[in-house]
Image (cartoon, rainbow, N blue to C red; front, side, top):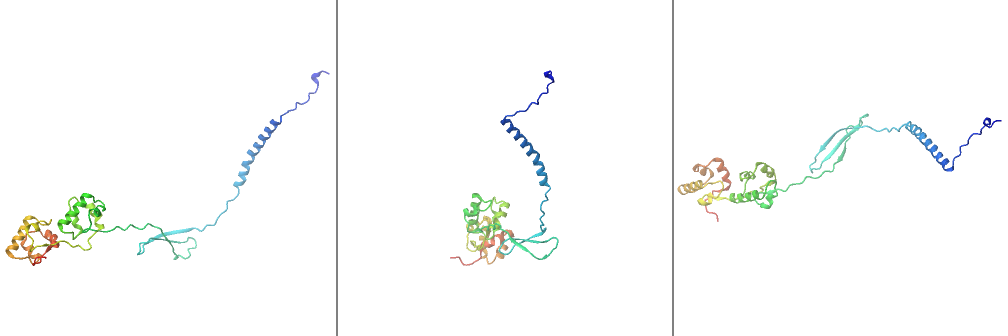
Length: 239
Protein backbone atom coordinates (compact mmCIF):
# COMPACT_ATOMS: atom_id res chain seq x y z
CA UNK A 1 0.00 0.00 0.00
CA UNK A 2 1.17 3.40 -0.87
CA UNK A 3 2.50 5.38 2.08
CA UNK A 4 0.27 8.33 1.35
CA UNK A 5 -2.76 6.28 2.17
CA UNK A 6 -1.42 5.36 5.53
CA UNK A 7 -3.33 6.78 8.52
CA UNK A 8 -1.36 9.54 10.17
CA UNK A 9 -1.32 9.75 13.97
CA UNK A 10 -2.50 13.12 15.55
CA UNK A 11 0.24 15.54 16.45
CA UNK A 12 0.51 15.95 20.17
CA UNK A 13 0.93 19.45 21.64
CA UNK A 14 3.85 19.40 23.94
CA UNK A 15 4.38 22.32 26.35
CA UNK A 16 7.22 22.95 28.62
CA UNK A 17 6.62 23.26 32.36
CA UNK A 18 7.20 27.01 32.17
CA UNK A 19 4.53 27.41 29.48
CA UNK A 20 2.13 25.22 31.44
CA UNK A 21 2.43 27.43 34.52
CA UNK A 22 1.86 30.53 32.40
CA UNK A 23 -1.30 28.99 30.87
CA UNK A 24 -2.64 28.13 34.33
CA UNK A 25 -2.11 31.70 35.52
CA UNK A 26 -3.99 33.06 32.50
CA UNK A 27 -6.92 30.69 33.09
CA UNK A 28 -7.00 31.61 36.82
CA UNK A 29 -7.04 35.34 36.00
CA UNK A 30 -9.92 34.87 33.55
CA UNK A 31 -11.84 32.99 36.23
CA UNK A 32 -11.37 35.76 38.79
CA UNK A 33 -12.32 38.41 36.23
CA UNK A 34 -15.55 36.48 35.49
CA UNK A 35 -16.38 35.82 39.16
CA UNK A 36 -16.02 39.41 40.58
CA UNK A 37 -19.06 40.97 38.75
CA UNK A 38 -21.25 38.09 39.90
CA UNK A 39 -20.11 38.55 43.50
CA UNK A 40 -20.73 42.29 43.49
CA UNK A 41 -24.17 41.84 41.95
CA UNK A 42 -25.18 39.48 44.74
CA UNK A 43 -23.93 41.95 47.35
CA UNK A 44 -26.00 44.81 45.88
CA UNK A 45 -29.18 42.80 46.33
CA UNK A 46 -28.71 42.72 50.12
CA UNK A 47 -31.11 45.19 51.73
CA UNK A 48 -29.59 47.99 53.82
CA UNK A 49 -30.68 48.10 57.46
CA UNK A 50 -33.39 50.63 58.21
CA UNK A 51 -32.99 52.64 61.38
CA UNK A 52 -36.03 54.13 63.04
CA UNK A 53 -34.88 57.61 63.95
CA UNK A 54 -37.16 60.01 65.75
CA UNK A 55 -37.69 63.15 63.74
CA UNK A 56 -37.44 66.24 65.89
CA UNK A 57 -38.62 69.64 64.87
CA UNK A 58 -36.68 72.67 66.17
CA UNK A 59 -39.36 75.27 66.58
CA UNK A 60 -37.35 78.32 67.47
CA UNK A 61 -34.42 79.64 69.46
CA UNK A 62 -34.89 82.11 72.29
CA UNK A 63 -32.11 84.38 73.52
CA UNK A 64 -32.22 85.21 77.22
CA UNK A 65 -29.84 87.77 78.70
CA UNK A 66 -29.86 87.68 82.53
CA UNK A 67 -28.63 90.50 84.74
CA UNK A 68 -25.07 89.16 84.83
CA UNK A 69 -24.72 89.58 81.04
CA UNK A 70 -24.57 85.82 80.46
CA UNK A 71 -26.09 84.57 77.24
CA UNK A 72 -28.20 81.43 77.20
CA UNK A 73 -29.45 79.76 74.03
CA UNK A 74 -32.71 78.01 74.84
CA UNK A 75 -34.01 75.46 72.36
CA UNK A 76 -37.58 74.30 72.59
CA UNK A 77 -38.00 70.90 70.92
CA UNK A 78 -40.81 68.40 70.87
CA UNK A 79 -41.77 65.28 68.95
CA UNK A 80 -43.21 66.20 65.56
CA UNK A 81 -45.50 63.21 65.45
CA UNK A 82 -46.85 62.80 68.96
CA UNK A 83 -46.25 66.40 70.18
CA UNK A 84 -45.91 65.29 73.76
CA UNK A 85 -44.85 67.68 76.54
CA UNK A 86 -44.93 70.87 74.46
CA UNK A 87 -44.05 72.96 77.52
CA UNK A 88 -40.79 71.14 78.19
CA UNK A 89 -37.72 73.31 77.66
CA UNK A 90 -34.13 72.19 77.17
CA UNK A 91 -31.71 75.01 78.07
CA UNK A 92 -28.17 74.98 76.77
CA UNK A 93 -25.66 77.45 78.13
CA UNK A 94 -23.64 78.96 75.31
CA UNK A 95 -19.96 79.70 75.68
CA UNK A 96 -19.37 83.26 74.56
CA UNK A 97 -16.64 85.80 74.99
CA UNK A 98 -17.39 88.37 77.65
CA UNK A 99 -17.53 91.95 76.34
CA UNK A 100 -14.53 94.11 77.04
CA UNK A 101 -15.43 96.84 79.51
CA UNK A 102 -13.91 100.13 78.41
CA UNK A 103 -12.28 102.18 81.11
CA UNK A 104 -13.82 105.61 81.56
CA UNK A 105 -11.49 108.61 81.40
CA UNK A 106 -11.89 111.64 83.69
CA UNK A 107 -11.69 114.59 81.32
CA UNK A 108 -10.40 116.97 83.99
CA UNK A 109 -7.58 114.76 85.28
CA UNK A 110 -6.46 112.88 82.16
CA UNK A 111 -3.04 113.74 80.76
CA UNK A 112 -1.90 113.63 77.13
CA UNK A 113 -0.98 109.94 77.34
CA UNK A 114 -4.46 109.00 78.58
CA UNK A 115 -6.12 111.08 75.87
CA UNK A 116 -4.03 109.58 73.04
CA UNK A 117 -5.45 106.15 73.91
CA UNK A 118 -8.90 107.37 72.85
CA UNK A 119 -9.95 106.58 69.25
CA UNK A 120 -9.17 109.36 66.80
CA UNK A 121 -7.06 111.38 69.28
CA UNK A 122 -3.44 111.95 68.32
CA UNK A 123 -0.64 114.00 69.89
CA UNK A 124 -1.91 117.26 68.35
CA UNK A 125 -5.50 116.95 69.54
CA UNK A 126 -4.49 115.67 72.97
CA UNK A 127 -2.22 118.71 73.45
CA UNK A 128 -5.03 121.05 72.39
CA UNK A 129 -7.44 119.45 74.86
CA UNK A 130 -5.03 119.88 77.76
CA UNK A 131 -4.22 123.48 76.76
CA UNK A 132 -7.88 124.42 76.36
CA UNK A 133 -8.69 122.83 79.71
CA UNK A 134 -6.07 125.02 81.41
CA UNK A 135 -7.47 128.17 79.81
CA UNK A 136 -11.01 127.32 80.84
CA UNK A 137 -10.06 126.36 84.36
CA UNK A 138 -11.43 122.84 83.85
CA UNK A 139 -14.33 121.31 81.95
CA UNK A 140 -17.80 121.32 83.44
CA UNK A 141 -19.32 119.45 80.47
CA UNK A 142 -17.97 116.86 78.02
CA UNK A 143 -19.72 118.76 75.24
CA UNK A 144 -17.13 121.55 75.59
CA UNK A 145 -14.77 119.37 73.56
CA UNK A 146 -16.69 120.48 70.47
CA UNK A 147 -15.23 123.96 70.96
CA UNK A 148 -11.65 122.74 70.42
CA UNK A 149 -10.18 123.65 67.06
CA UNK A 150 -9.80 120.66 64.74
CA UNK A 151 -12.10 118.33 66.72
CA UNK A 152 -14.19 116.38 64.15
CA UNK A 153 -17.75 115.62 65.13
CA UNK A 154 -17.20 111.95 64.26
CA UNK A 155 -14.29 111.77 66.70
CA UNK A 156 -16.31 113.49 69.41
CA UNK A 157 -19.12 110.97 68.99
CA UNK A 158 -16.65 108.09 69.43
CA UNK A 159 -14.91 109.38 72.55
CA UNK A 160 -17.82 111.07 74.33
CA UNK A 161 -19.07 107.71 75.62
CA UNK A 162 -15.67 106.99 77.18
CA UNK A 163 -15.31 110.34 78.98
CA UNK A 164 -16.76 111.36 82.30
CA UNK A 165 -16.74 114.25 84.78
CA UNK A 166 -17.58 112.65 88.12
CA UNK A 167 -16.72 115.78 90.12
CA UNK A 168 -16.42 118.74 87.73
CA UNK A 169 -14.57 121.29 89.87
CA UNK A 170 -13.58 124.32 87.81
CA UNK A 171 -11.50 127.38 88.59
CA UNK A 172 -13.76 130.41 89.09
CA UNK A 173 -13.12 134.08 88.36
CA UNK A 174 -13.91 136.47 91.19
CA UNK A 175 -15.87 138.90 89.06
CA UNK A 176 -15.91 141.54 91.81
CA UNK A 177 -12.12 141.53 92.36
CA UNK A 178 -10.47 140.41 89.09
CA UNK A 179 -8.85 142.96 86.79
CA UNK A 180 -9.33 143.28 83.05
CA UNK A 181 -6.40 141.00 82.15
CA UNK A 182 -7.56 138.18 84.41
CA UNK A 183 -11.11 138.32 83.09
CA UNK A 184 -10.00 138.57 79.45
CA UNK A 185 -7.76 135.47 79.78
CA UNK A 186 -10.83 133.27 79.83
CA UNK A 187 -11.73 131.87 76.35
CA UNK A 188 -15.36 133.02 76.70
CA UNK A 189 -14.53 136.72 77.31
CA UNK A 190 -13.01 139.24 74.92
CA UNK A 191 -10.93 142.29 75.91
CA UNK A 192 -13.65 144.84 75.25
CA UNK A 193 -16.11 142.83 77.32
CA UNK A 194 -13.62 142.57 80.20
CA UNK A 195 -13.13 146.36 80.16
CA UNK A 196 -16.89 146.91 80.20
CA UNK A 197 -17.30 144.68 83.25
CA UNK A 198 -14.56 146.45 85.22
CA UNK A 199 -15.83 149.93 84.32
CA UNK A 200 -19.41 149.09 85.34
CA UNK A 201 -18.18 147.61 88.60
CA UNK A 202 -16.12 150.72 89.38
CA UNK A 203 -19.10 152.99 88.65
CA UNK A 204 -21.92 150.96 90.23
CA UNK A 205 -20.33 148.70 92.77
CA UNK A 206 -20.14 144.93 93.07
CA UNK A 207 -22.19 142.45 91.09
CA UNK A 208 -24.61 140.56 93.29
CA UNK A 209 -26.02 138.10 90.75
CA UNK A 210 -25.80 136.89 87.19
CA UNK A 211 -28.99 138.85 86.34
CA UNK A 212 -27.25 142.11 87.28
CA UNK A 213 -24.26 141.15 85.12
CA UNK A 214 -26.54 140.35 82.20
CA UNK A 215 -28.33 143.67 82.55
CA UNK A 216 -25.16 145.75 82.29
CA UNK A 217 -23.24 143.62 79.89
CA UNK A 218 -24.08 143.56 76.21
CA UNK A 219 -23.25 139.90 75.93
CA UNK A 220 -25.18 137.22 74.10
CA UNK A 221 -27.32 135.08 76.36
CA UNK A 222 -25.77 131.81 75.20
CA UNK A 223 -22.27 133.14 75.78
CA UNK A 224 -23.16 134.33 79.27
CA UNK A 225 -24.68 130.93 80.11
CA UNK A 226 -21.42 129.26 79.11
CA UNK A 227 -19.42 131.66 81.30
CA UNK A 228 -21.56 131.50 84.46
CA UNK A 229 -20.09 128.19 85.79
CA UNK A 230 -16.70 129.97 85.88
CA UNK A 231 -17.84 133.09 87.78
CA UNK A 232 -17.90 133.80 91.48
CA UNK A 233 -19.96 136.71 92.82
CA UNK A 234 -18.36 136.85 96.25
CA UNK A 235 -17.89 140.36 97.55
CA UNK A 236 -14.92 139.80 99.88
CA UNK A 237 -11.60 138.91 98.25
CA UNK A 238 -10.69 135.22 98.34
CA UNK A 239 -7.76 134.24 100.54
